[in-house]
Image (cartoon, rainbow, N blue to C red):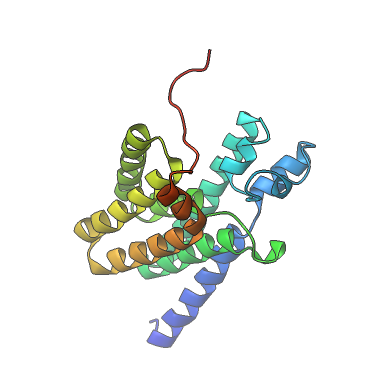
Length: 204
């Protein structure tokens, strides 16, 4: 029978496991393997899929997006298989933080949205659908990807409360706060009206 101290120990283990999953810089590794150089030298300097797209390769950007989602989902699913929801939260938090602050890149990573989405799919898939629908609706109406992500993670935290209770709300709210912090420069540009916009129409 596990004691409280045993449970605390396993939470730390899953937190560390999640961190090292999340810290894998797939955007950097994939672009370098494809001979595209260091993705940190272009655009925003991020290792995320949005910046990888600035290389001009949609396939590489999609591969980065998928890898970043999976590195959020896999440690959560491992934790749920072997332990309980609080361990899965620890694994998910670790993966999320690992992506934003990867030890291999001097703690300068991506903004965490794709890995956050993977964590949502792993820990409570209905809130991942809430995120997707909210992001798409906001992006379609406002044409700003970062704003869509900020609105979606706020709505997700509220949805987490109704679907799973206070612990899930607190967990998702903490992740949302960190996403807001990671997007602080985007928020400044949104306020100034200079944030770049996206288009859903096909180019000629």
